[in-house]
Length: 258
Image 1 (cartoon, rainbow, N blue to C red):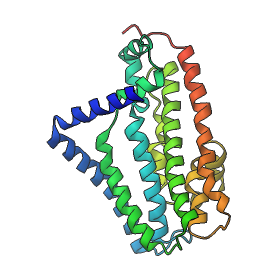
Image 2: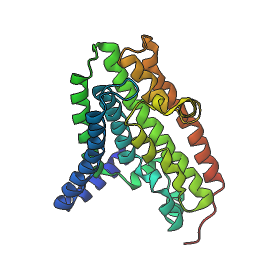
Image 3: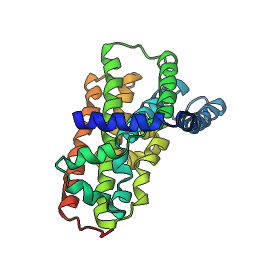
Image 4: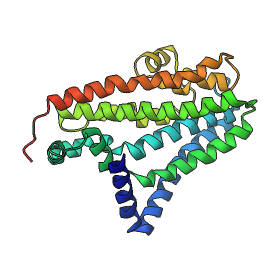
């Protein structure tokens, strides 16, 4: 943990060396997400509901997904950019150091500029909490925390899975963006609106629905079972096969010779 804290401080000091660039990039990240928010707003300005979900409800769903994705991308960016470590031989240096591989990869990239999007998510969450018509109590508040935590773990697991594939392909696989950046985009709305096939896939294959859809139904009162708020924690189990695949990739790694 001390080593990761040192990585954290090094990246933070590096960002602060060019404060203007850092804050402009962070503002750019905010504006990119703001454009997506405008798309949702214009949609509901034309249509009052989407599959029975109101603007405030969908905004709550979107803010949670965006917050979870942003936290994962900020702190697990090393796995998302892992293909470059393979191709330039940097992973060879990591292997000979007397520290854990996962900790070292995590410390290679920490994207503080992504907090521009995190600020956007906080603003949307505050607005949606007060305008969603939900009768808030402690179980529902804890469900929101559980959804954010579970979503962060699921997105981080996908980054680890992506890095595992890089051991065999060297270059990154663009189709993985369907499950990361793509999930952030279609997560603007409850995943159940996309049909039963997509819902089954996001429940049993990539557990996106476990932190986004089913707990959300409990939040807005369409389902009354409090245990739905625990499903995001069940979705965290997804990290186990992703880590096993990563370890399998490490065991099959051959140096690129860079």
